[in-house]
Amino acid sequence: MDLFEHGSKTGNSNTLPLAEKLRPRTLDEIIGQDFLYQGSPILVLFEQRKLPSLILWGPPGCGKTTFAKVLSESYGISFFSVNAISTGAKELRSIGEQAKQKHHEFNEKTLLFVDEIHRLNKSQQDVLLPFVEAGNFLLVGATTENPSFQINSALLSRCRVLKFNSIGEKAFQKLLDKAMTHYSLKADDILKEDAQKQLIALANGDARKFLNLCEQLIDYFLAMKAGKQSAISWPCGEEDLENILPSMDLYFDRGDAHYDLASAMIKSIRASDADAAIYYMARMLEGGEDPMFIARRLVISASEDVGNADPKAIGIATSCMQAVHLIGMPEAGITLAQATTYLASAPKSNRSYMAYNEAIAEVKKSGNLEVPLHIRNSRSKLMSDMGYGKGYQYAHNHEEGVTHHHLPKDLEGKEFYRPLDKHYEKHILAYLDFFRKKRDS
Image (cartoon, rainbow, N blue to C red; front, side, top):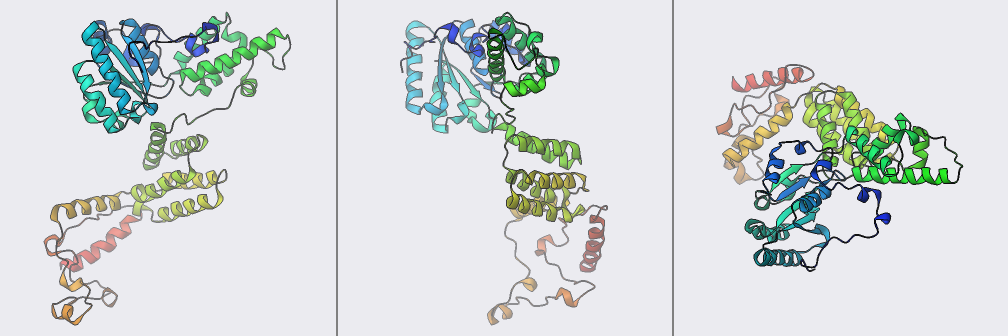
């Protein structure tokens, strides 16, 4: 790959997809991104030509590649694009050396655009580092994944992260008008208001997908008009639109969306918002999520968030997971709905979860403290002679409670589990208080 000969190759403009024909050429034409307001810090830097290396983080079709190309064209910087999936460390090093030579010999800068930069491994990312530090090229990486998890800290610290958002409804409306104008049409000639909203929903925040859908729709409209016959009455409604265009693809990526929706479901359960919980659960299922993944999250939530406020919850969640495994989709969705709404409606306590965390912290702090001799297992005469098991009180023979402690001596009297004084845990609290007083007496 020769950086000196590399350039954008464009074919016949008539054969280009609509998304490419309407691709923004200036920063002003980019829509739907909050950081591109007049006087924003990043635009001030651009105006002063103090261009930092960038990590562009956002969902597919929100304008990351377009933004990089516009930067290159606006500031007269050579644009060189690679995809992380098909680019190795050797090729990245070669690109860096050529960019370095070009910078030193001709005082020309290069913008290296790395699509899906999160797919570069650590050693590949390390190859980029010295070239970024020396300013041999301007690195612009695009990623759908959280860069703080996917980009190593050394490279990330030398870049500025720009968060790109999914395209919103107002921006889509502008894009729809622009697409129609390109064909000398009006949106209202082809689509009723409900169908326009459905078209926007089909795109799921992805501008590239939206323009592809517009192109399919317009091509169909023009073909029907040319033939002077159509089974559809124009402008068409939502039902006709569904017959013309492919169905929704709700789960547009398996990265952040996967974890964001799962997080939203669990946090809704935790806050006893059954409506939100069932909504996010339904979104995951409709988007193609593995129902067993959802079931496992429900089992975790039953212990972490409901806990002993309702001890039946863990049994219901576990039974749900078994049922999902046995019956599969689509009926498994009914079982998941029951478990989700039950957990969201159940009383909440995280005291057992907090007790576990406190116990872990104590173990790390105090190390391997001696187990008291009286509760050790005496398996031989030697152990018995050493005092193993001596003085042990068999609890079933002491219904009023035993008097010896079970924690290591340095931790005697320490309480990890402190139940809430409400819901089912109030009974547990009363029970434990009785035996704790007996031991401490």
